[in-house]
Image 1 (cartoon, rainbow over the protein chains, first blue to last red):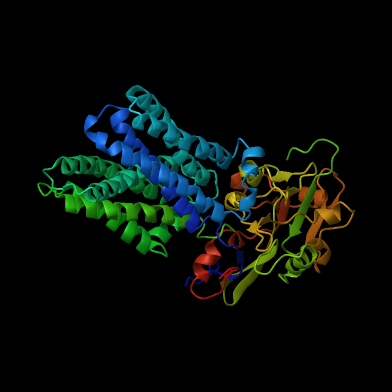
Image 2: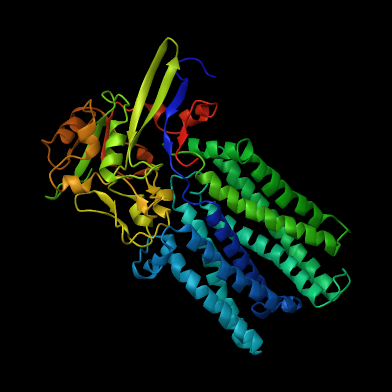
Length: 306
Length: 210
């Protein structure tokens, strides 16, 4: 312990319970899965990448299911869930939560419209509704980043990197999750997943996309941490918590090592591209992104402000 | 400060050289506002500075700063929290949905979720008392007269004279929230997280919920 006039100890303080906990982290995780799988479903109908056609339906179902699940976490989180209708009546255009109330209601409508077009076989309408859905999918996830960003006093939340990082991690977790869903979908229908089969080739090209997006995600995370570690006192203390403190195991161990570095090694390992390994990597990535949400939500409120 | 107009503008001055850290304000607030167990609308943070034999103890009474530019008001999605004409920032208990965004966004951490009513609660400057011409409970209870309350638009009020006549600070001015609670003789060690860092080794900080 330091000796001298600069030695100070805390005798008494009050710190209230955190505002956003596990429930909000899970909410962000599920909207991320939804947005990510929506992007994948538009690859074939929206952008004409025909080899991803078999993916469109399961991806769109996943997108819709995840987005229906996500707001349930919000309902459990708020103190007065029966007053949720206030969100649509008393609006505050300055609040990202108000933006979200409308994004969370219009985006599923686009999903349904798009799904309807695919099932009725109207290619052109599917293309238009898919492409129009993309900005909504982007916004529905980026706005959760803005919710954290607008808490200007919270370390690591108040960074312009957060909405961007959220978008990238949405694509990462969405793609990884779709690999798992698609593998399950094939298994259910008794189709082969061998690397040489059509399904296997689809999985491997998804894995190639996943590898590169994951690399971008890792770089962005490193930049965020690096800049915060030379920033103001609160940010430095928060980074110290992530690297050496309470959250070190969860951040360095699970989020970075198990969730990013290990899968990157698997995905970029030359000449051993087996679908089994890809599935393991995808599962690790999904868990890693879940921990990324938990770590970021927790670190902002870990240290008292006063 | 940009204080024009005829309305009153309520503000508080806390003279830290007079504060003895007795927590009478915290108790009076609890009783007056029937604040539930485990949460506080005001409390006194205490730190000890220096090494024996050169030591001193510093207290920091904390409550809502009733900012002129309140972050909580701009992020509330249902406009449940708002600033009254006289500058007092309050929460409409019938409109708040308890999403706790304001609590996360407040740079001072002075809001909490009322565990009984399941909505956000905070210091109201005892608006039910000041509207009736009384002082806030914490001000009335303070035995050393460290807390002074009054109209910042009246240049002759005690708060105005104290702020004008002595070096006065606000908490975390870097957030540009323009707090209406002013401190005289603020000790840097009492603000921020330094105490917590060292306190982790066993000297107690107190978390209300665990």
